[in-house]
Image (cartoon, rainbow, N blue to C red):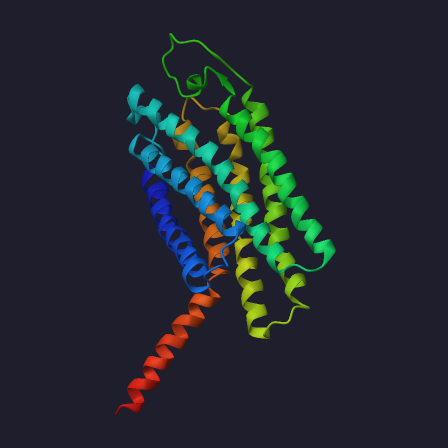
Length: 283
């Protein structure tokens, strides 16, 4: 039974993802006032997708995700498969929205034309691959519900699981390339900007950390083959895919949000610095 592992990882990454998104919105709307941009809007949308993904995963755990098939009755297993199906869709939407948000954030500070075009092309290719892949996953069976339907008397047709599996490998590779490009590009972007060295190191380090989300994608890749058999022991066999997918989304979103929080940290330092100075002077 690996449902506990899936549950623990989901909760562990839900908290920092939600907190960092809220702090990002607060920083851009309250501290910087008019500084909120399309990158923030894209992150809020991404968080909505991630939240839906995590809720679907938690509901899936309640209905057998991570458990052996013999421990589940047909109705419970069917519900577990349905929630897993939703997870797959909202994972794709989440990664697409995250790439757009990070790309728009980098466009705010990029000045070199080559850097700008690299960012734009990654965003464009991301959408061009993510949208068809999401549609293919959604409509891979006719009717759609046949994907999770375990009633042997019901009939339907599905695209070959091999096709979905191969495309999943392709999307995983593209996601990794995009993540590492976005992770390494800030070093070249901020190198010639008029920033304090400390600030440059901070921005590069945080966005570089976001690229670690793609490490989770790489770790997950050897387990993608478990997506092929979506009836049998699917809910148990795909536990590693579920866990590392959550890690990928959580790390990427949290790191991308933290990269925008420097004004909040400066405000807190100023506030507590003034408070400390006032308290010392009154003694």
